[in-house]
Amino acid sequence: MLSIARKFAGTVLPGILKPLRVLWNEIIAFAFFLLAATAVPSTYKAIRDFDGEITSLMRIALTGTFILVMSGYGVYSLLRARKIGRT
Image 1 (tube, rainbow, N blue to C red):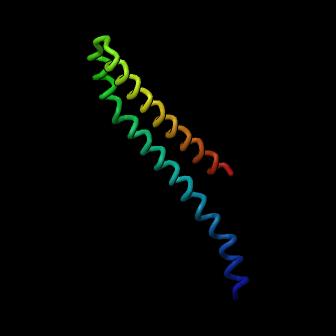
Image 2 (tube, rainbow, N blue to C red; image 1 turned 135 degrees about the vertical axis):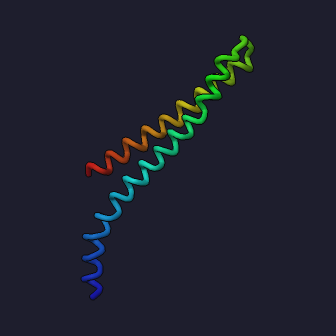
Image 3 (cartoon, rainbow, N blue to C red; image 1 turned 135 degrees about the horizontal axis):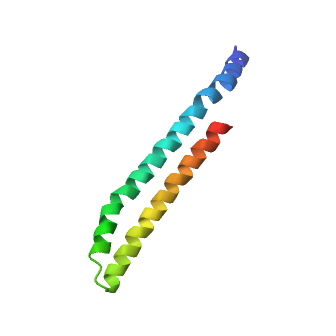
């Protein structure tokens, strides 16, 4: 009976877990893109209010870096989901 349960788990579980892993990575990618999108208005406002001071420049650099990093993680998660889906 135990061998039947192991055989069942070995054949059925990978078929269930693979789509769940793909879905998880897609949800994480969406969350990262959402975080990046929430920083866009702040960056736009910082660029619009730029007055040449170092604090204004640092605000633009930090929010821009945040957008780039969050977008990068989002792209990485989507590529990872695509890779998992192909195997």
